[in-house]
Image (cartoon, one colour):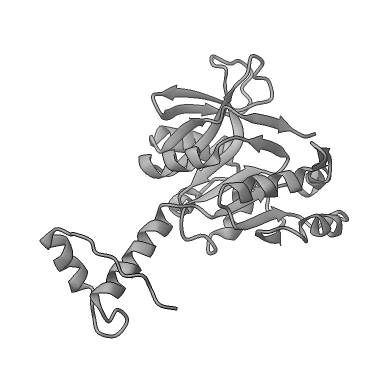
Length: 249
């Protein structure tokens, strides 16, 4: 198919840089160089992969009805609406696996179930280490979220830190992880503390850079080990979801 021709103006230095990438083999022309790096840049400014973390014992929650459909179908719809086309479900093998496979069989995004007997959710997440090349979404599998995920992605890419955490406010914070903010930064995170000094809580959805796995030494739990570490390093951004949220139990 013929490609449309366009005319653009570039600084001489930028044009020289483009021309320097023409090697005569992989990139054979100025036009091909511009097309290649434009595609690469656009891919780096978008996120198309998500991970659902769900314990085997909680798989039944994915099959519960919410708003007229199962939780997993709500989650698939949420991701599809926000440009996600690859989803990994990390879990254990249970008697509900076939029911879960049936629920995802007609999904319009690619879904792969990965079974692991990891000791914690951080160890479980590491099974996708070699599968993700760009930033990716992680969501607790027994939660329902409905908000503008694209705004969260935009903030993550603009601030360029290791991780971004979805946040909510709650009058009663018992049972939630809590965050203290300094501007956009989460400077302290505690998982289900006995006494709270904030009403800002974890919404169970995150965006990570793939380099996050470099920080996984001695990390078993995302909430207890990784997030406090990221907060200390000033590498954890907070984003208020301002949407619907429900935790199924």
